[in-house]
Structures are given as C-alpha cells and as structure tokens.
Length: 78
Image (tube, rainbow, N blue to C red; front, top):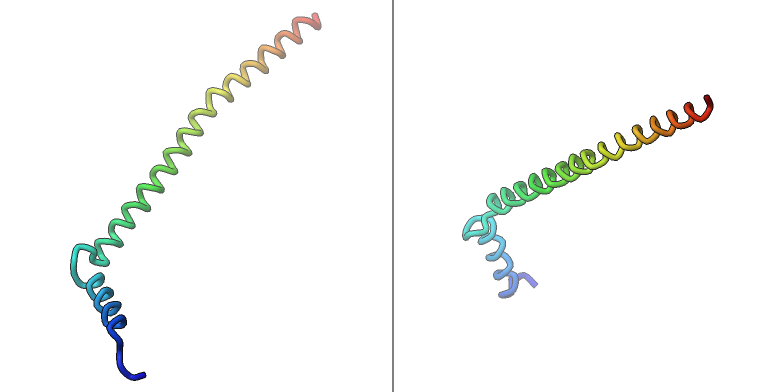
C-alpha cells in the first residue's frame, strides 16, 4: 500500500512536464485561453452592433409609414 505504481509515476511526470517544460507550459496555455476569450467577447459585441445597425433603418421606415398613414387619415377627414 505504501509504494507508488508505474501509473502514479507516469501521471506525476505528465503533470510536471505540463507545468514546467515542453511546448505546453501552463503560462502559454493560459495566455492562449485569454486571447480566445477576448476574441469571443469582441465577436459578440460586433454582432450586437451589427444587429442594432440593422434595426435602425427598419425603425425609421416604420415611423415614416405612420406619418404617411396619419397624413392620409387627416386628408380623408377634410
């Protein structure tokens, strides 16, 4: 019960390798993750801006339509 098997040493070695050596250092992985999150947030904000810009012309058309309908209704009353 007191000894470590080969699988324990393999797992410990893999963790040490990830943390301290090799291409996949923990600081590099976290930096890449932060870049990904920033890119995702930027993409989401661009979608919101594009959606707002798409709604503005439609809102303007609706107000013009209401104004024309009210003018027509006023001219019929006279």
